[in-house]
Length: 377
Image (tube, one colour):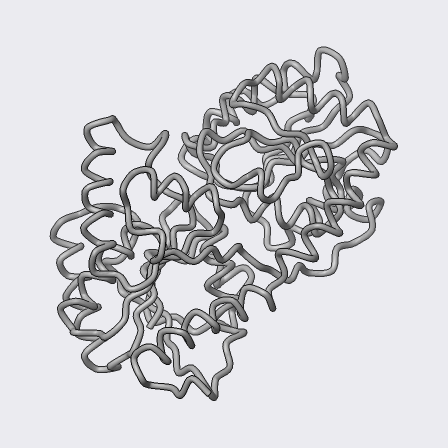
């Protein structure tokens, strides 16, 4: 039984969908339970995975509301008692708390949780962060296996005292991208000039992603390359900040959520990520698979996707350095094209959907063998 707080467009929903589609139905009888997305979010199931069946738990959304959370806990516990899963696998922080709590109450034999990132930096005050750490330490004690999307994420969690090294498995994301249109066609669809430099941001527009830093990069780049176009593919609670700063000449375009994100990558010369904290951003994986280099902050497990100096350029969370990297790639076609080719080769090798499914199936099989449900032969 797989539990996630909501299937909003982003890395966790993409990975969950790949697992629901890819795991062998003759070996695994699995169900997905999730809440609903928020008003400023797009539903991944509606946009990209209508074939994935979801059992909805209305009170399992993103917001923390004690009464609703207790109802969600009760609903999940009841669902587990009916379904009687051998393994409960939770994704994202809130579902990790309620799902593992319900698994303990329902006496599910094995519990697995995936950290698609973590809440240790950039989300809460120091006092709240300490509470988060204490809660995750307690939950780790009742979890069989902890999955991290990258080594950097795992190491941060271990440094915070969450879990033991032997509990962790590192399972990077995996995806199979849709076939993109050609560059000229992509730009035609998006109403972009054929000869202007184009930089894309793909993801939520929220505080941890630092849209203010993105706008600072835009301003700095436009001083040198005024014809550059910046695309924002996504939405969030800070969309208004971007709208207020939008360029009346159309040099910054807010696209909202798009089901055809492959069109955005096909139109772009590079992708830009300005976050304070990340797990392993699927947007950078998708960009790499499309042959587009990245300029990104070196946070979380970003460096495990973007190989600095080979498939893109990394920087500390500093707008000036991100702008300099962006200008360097926009001004050097051979370098940018070479990095794009290397990005495609690297991401195809490491971040395919088949590899994600195999790694997860192997993890479940190891649990089944240890509990005696399957033979080790």
